[in-house]
Image (tube, rainbow, N blue to C red):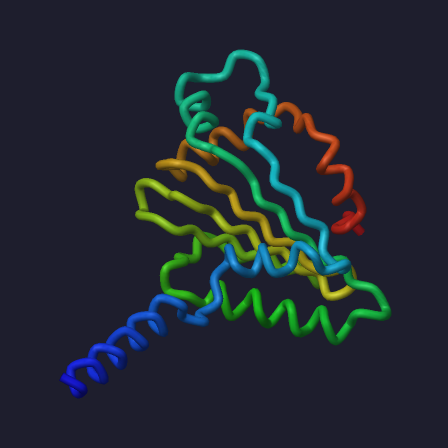
Length: 178
């Protein structure tokens, strides 16, 4: 009986250890970083997107598939260079997870943009946009939705007339065009 209890206890500890895995996740990173003074954090509903007149049903369907945007931006300055390097490495490690498929990579004038997604080739459940600038910092945007179609989302981008949110003003200047 004593051996059964020991084996059961060991099995229970193994299950708890697996369930509480320390593998970094994007969601955990967002939560852990929200209280850090070097980060700006915003949760913005997709309803802030205002479309041009005469949009197609396909574009309306694409907008309906969007739920919200989670935005996390690290503002780099002269006093937080070491922390910037550390945080940037944490994000890169998380984004190396095989569940994220790379959609696009852009490098221009010291800026890097990586767009990844989670889901299938036909329908994405999450799009991650990671933009970094070695002088200004980085931004991490999670576009959350339900069965977002990549082709329809690209058409939707061209139909956006305006973004109606005071929250985005906090991010102005973070990635100014040089």
